[in-house]
Image (cartoon, rainbow, N blue to C red; front, side, top):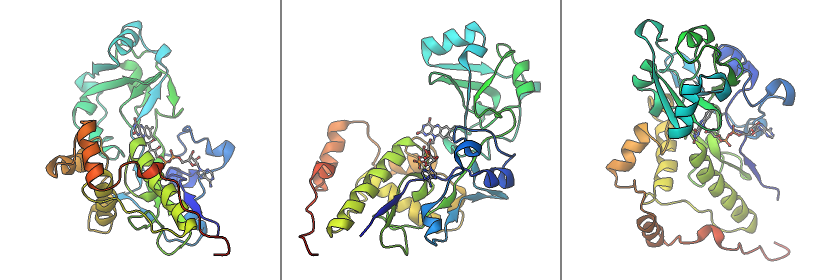
Length: 293
Ligand SMILES: Cc1cc2nc3c(=O)[nH]c(=O)nc-3n(C[C@H](O)[C@H](O)[C@H](O)COP(=O)(O)OP(=O)(O)OC[C@H]3O[C@@H](n4cnc5c(N)ncnc54)[C@H](O)[C@@H]3O)c2cc1C
């Protein structure tokens, strides 16, 4: 039988950015050119979930990129030397209230409202969901600032976390036998690392489904296994759809530390994986179903 993995993300399409945001922010997804996100799960009849906090359905993507060349030489050199630049915003020019709505809770402390925080990612990554261009250009060093992504970052950003699939901890979508999901489709887990972890597991289990082998559920003794189960559980509870979960900060990072799951010691992590009997699990060759089955 065919097997499908839905990794179509949760950002956009344009009607969601118009209804729940400030309109199309002209982000990197380029919906007007390539067409908006199309959820495989929704097409298959799955009733999907949306994040929500207060009146906000979904969440506003949490950062933008400025063209590095459009910033002052002092800011560009600081970024290139240190990878980060923190520029205090004069009190009168602070734009209040935009941080509460952002998708990346770990970057929503007051420091992000009182300062322009830039990271050198090639361009200058602005750790704010948007910043009105007129106000930004008032700040010393930003007189000629230009947005690289989204182009309308002076006004808003893309809306995400609408269209998540209900799923089990093997990442099989509820109600559809031959559909698995990874990345943001698998829930309110924000980030590339998180998408790599869930996408790898979804792909692995999809192959096992085809070969007739039992799906792998990662144990709670590993951060990835705990996160997959925890996020699914929290999304079914009061208030759980209002939070975001990531290995890089905020509520899930606190939980990892509390449970002793947080470590950057590769040897220690390897021992935990070995104790769970999972060393090299993704490198194992699958055992194809015998012909005729
Ligand atoms: C501005 C911004 C900054 C970020 N910064 C960071 C960061 O610094 N670190 C970090 O870890 N995370 C960051 N994130 C979060 C991270 O990018 C996402 O959580 C992650 O990319 C989600 O991966 P995904 O594969 O689920 O979805 P996506 O990355 O959205 O990928 C889904 C893809 O599927 C395509 N697609 C949709 N429908 C279809 C279809 N029917 N057929 C084919 N293709 C389709 C879409 O066009 C898209 O390319 C950032 C996100 C944003 C928006």
